[in-house]
Length: 287
Image (tube, rainbow, N blue to C red; front, top):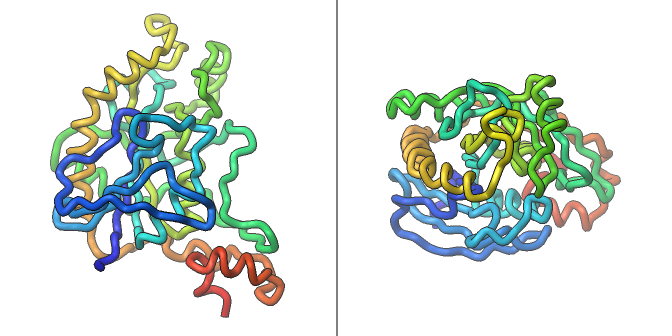
């Protein structure tokens, strides 16, 4: 079977991807357990893709409960080289309005104790994460936006909070003072693990609200978030489809070699059990 090269992760409000043909549902097991849901695979704009509902169909998994390692490792097992992630975010700046789509190029971590690495257990790896989003894949999305005239905004910082509660006013104002752009609960761990898996990664941040700092929007409710997301879902899917159409065969970025200079452990000291578990990621660097 032809390898799947493009992965799509849908967040709140985006539980399926329209336009996929030759649809097949695939259950994937990983060394880190089961992903959030079965993958929906098929052909989109002439290319094989795999779609995963981040929180499971029916939205049954909290952000803190997500098995990020299984989700990204399963993508790697399917052959995925690029991941386009879509997620709901709150805006921390007046200029990012509800229904806007932002492509952040930085992350700031405010989560607590989430596992965000495949490594450990005898294998020490320090990836470069100064620029956490693949610049080439981000440009592909901007080129897709140019073709569709949606008005996507490129750049800015995504603050990843723990949740599941939304921010207090005090927290929201502190984040604004730090010049953060948008706030969400999921994408930082995905970005780190995608880099460790040498997969290109980009976030489509779908703005649903002004968090709670805005004087005219002093509370965030799930009903408000879903109402806006339902409006934005069609736009997001149009952008994804056009980006998939434009993605070429080559990857002119460094994402595919992220581990080349990142493994610190003496190869002879890596436990066999760890080598076996992570063979898919590290085999080419063991000799």
